[in-house]
Amino acid sequence: MQELNNNSFDKIIPLAEGINHNKALVYSVLEKNHHGRVIVDNIESPTVALIITKVNFMFVLGKLTSKNTYDSLKEVIFSRTLKSEEIILFAYTEDIRLSLDKIFNNIRGIKIYRKQFKFCSSKFMHDNKKSELIIPEGFELKEMNNELALQAGMDLSICNFSKDAFGFSLLKDGIIISLCYSLFNGGGETEIDIKTNEHFQRKGYGTIVASAFLSECIRKQINPNWACWPYREASCALAKKLGFKELEDIPVHFWAEKM
View 1 (cartoon, helix red, strand yellow):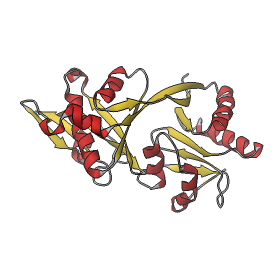
View 2 (view 1 turned 135 degrees about the horizontal axis):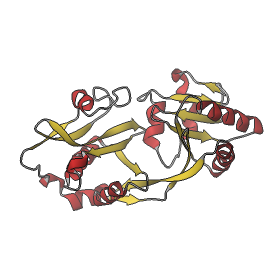
View 3 (view 1 turned 180 degrees about the horizontal axis):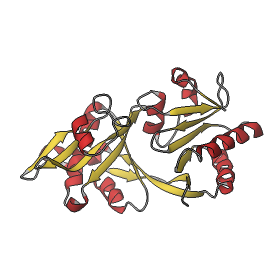
View 4 (view 1 turned 180 degrees about the vertical axis):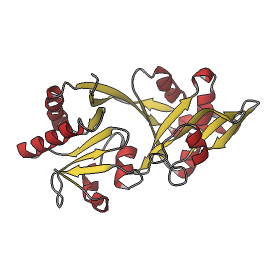
């Protein structure tokens, strides 16, 4: 398999058509909003592609048309284990998932699941009455910028608010208490990331920043994606509170160096 120059990413857009999860992440790379990598079986006419993001999330698109293609993908994944402390790999077809089962068994990997939710804007607007968003006394709601991002310890090479990223933060005495922002943007969708200072959790602050963010998504006509690991029970509950409908869990192949 060979790595595509980013000027040729459009060659694999047909392989991404109709994907049913993580669309924002995949298209953020294809649209060059995120500095990811794309490795394919054939430079001129790719039938399978491995998309690698900077946050260790990887995606396999297309079909494994031959044993040679399978062997090549296996070799790439094995080589990645030498360069990364963990691999989080998603696929979109059952035949590729079965092939990944074999590959990951050989490197002592496991299969886990990730929860995903679909946004229902009408339910959000009805339940949350956005026009009546109340900011607690002593707090300030601000749009995210790179200065606030650096204060929050974010990597601007992944999420840059002077480019395509957007979001909101809730501050008290100049300190970020909670924030909700677009971690990846692409394909008309955005992947949500939300964080609240551990000393201020369970007080509704996450609801405030998320509500502001979702209203901005509606204004921009961007579809928000919400996904999390099953143990993030508070995140799952907040998603449902904000008008998201829980969908079928996504199978994920996982490997970590310290497993």
